Image (cartoon, rainbow, N blue to C red):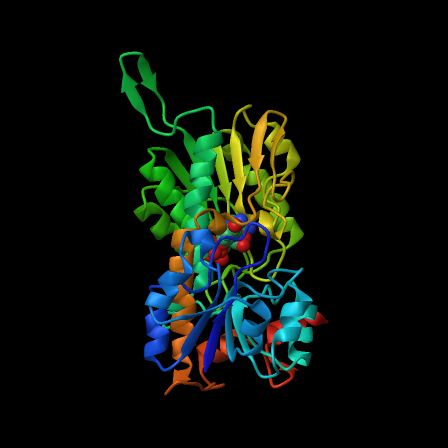
Length: 382
Ligand code: NAD
């Protein structure tokens, strides 16, 4: 079977779905890997790097896609809403596409892919289970986002993060508040701690308290109890508007006293909850920084402008949209490991064999044999 790896076409995307070092694991499993010429440019990989590892390089994108049985991408259709129609037209019926596809935000596009009789796996839908850990690309990318968000905040802040005791006096450490202690939030805590900040964090899932504390941060307790805060998959559940209003009020003072706030609060398939009201931003000390990495789903802060860095009443508010693409080498390394482990999970004797009873295969499968097959995506279409 031919596995095609096209060059990413989304503006600013520098990652690649498969790095040359991972390629041999696919050829050993009996697959043939074909890379589009120049696909590794964003990570400074040359075509020859892929050829040395047993891959073939194809100059013509249409020819690459039309011969593919399996296509591996970072941003597939949906994840890139302007995905070229010519690319889709090039794919033959029955081709398997594995990539990020934003299936819950773009269910109409998923429907179109199903009608084109493509088999589509969304990396976003990978179950967060122990068995699927090595295939969990969202966690890999969130790790990078959490780390990089802290660096962006440190860079934008007019203050230092660590305490310095110098001949010129003592510099007090920055106070960093992390809102949402999932994968990105925990990495943000660890990074802010490594830089010497005093760190506090809050999450509606009380089970993360121990993890927060083990990283050296203080877990903030609020007089607020979420209803069934966590679903069976370990993700947060959506709460009522009243709950979020009360949460905003309870967090306001703490946020106003922070030098840096990193927000990562997310509920899968939903818009990000707004947890910082405009008045709270206006009440922060000028020069304070908010990095809202939930900006990709609208943002946790009322004044965030997705994709922009703004100054609101003296407060710097950054809403980054594609942080992993800013660290393309390691983001691609992690993604490549995740996607190839997933693919190999489904390959037997050089052939793709879908076990539709398997929780990982079934969990990530969106479209197959002309049908949309994922319940959450079908629900999102209603
Ligand atoms: P995650 O599901 O692991 O973590 C989100 C956390 O938010 C969970 O721990 C959840 O309990 C918490 N949460 C939900 N509602 C909350 C509330 N009301 N108050 C406090 N906490 C709440 O998700 P993740 O993988 O860490 O990703 C976090 C966010 O970062 C997502 O929005 C994701 O899309 C985004 N992200 C952005 C980029 C980027 O480039 N901007 C890259 C990767 C991830």
